[in-house]
Length: 150
Image (cartoon, rainbow, N blue to C red; front, side, top):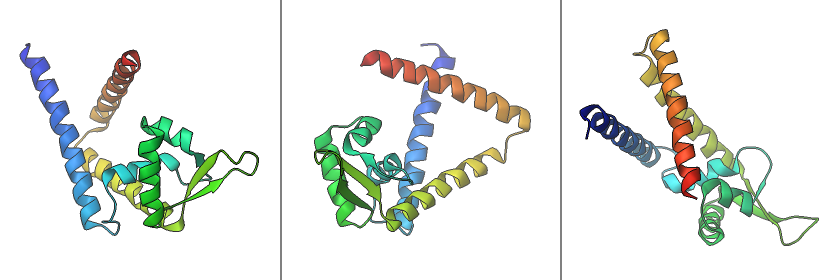
């Protein structure tokens, strides 16, 4: 394998693992230590405003309804989410965040912004633009690969 490609691969894997470890550590040490990364991502998928259907959330997270039901049940027990039925169609289940869930969402969002700000302090404005362009291309290519696998 080309050495440059191997180095890029190694860095992508290492960056991914580092972000996950930093995120896990921040959750364990934070005010919401009762949450897992998966639960935080479920909270993010619901969003701050209004409610979403279980189908919308499962689709956004690319998980089954059964897996989502288990996760939502846990988050309801922990006080982060609430479930309600649609007034127009009782078969539709809506999920929304409680005040505690919204606070967890905002704190996690702030964690990410603080992490990015800390990373970017070492970059010049030109390097920021190059990084942004490269990450945008990377993101597009990864989405294309993922969508072509489905």
